[in-house]
Image (cartoon, helix red, strand yellow):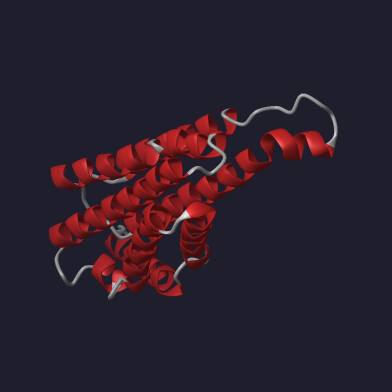
Length: 212
């Protein structure tokens, strides 16, 4: 099975998730900047954080499926598990905003982030297991230090919100979550290199097979 349908479906789901999140933003009652900051300030910040997270997953998903040659049933289910975790972002984002960054919603938001990261790792490993240790994706992932660091930061954020008393724990947790964004917002140049090599190789193969 080719990857085009999976990519198209995933792109559509991610677009819907972003649309739902932006629809959750409340319009200010007044017409001044102070009205915007008073009613929608935290909403804009939480939306921005979640939007960038979704964008990072879309970017990584796009690059990863450039290196996938065929799709199995296991890959389909793993991809659905990732989309399920990402589909919870509108709910957890809205709760964090409406609660004013209360402890429990921030913890649940962190669990959502951790679940999404784990689901992506599972999808990645299922694809590698299908294609073999010598696959292009295996070479692109390498030791996956950024992926492991992301999981550590997500866990650290959850534990900080749970264990550090007062608002300090919440702010430390949010700092951990933002650190993951900063780490991933710049694409890994190694993955871009492998994707280009794989694309060039496919183009060369197609040209060699073309009738003269």
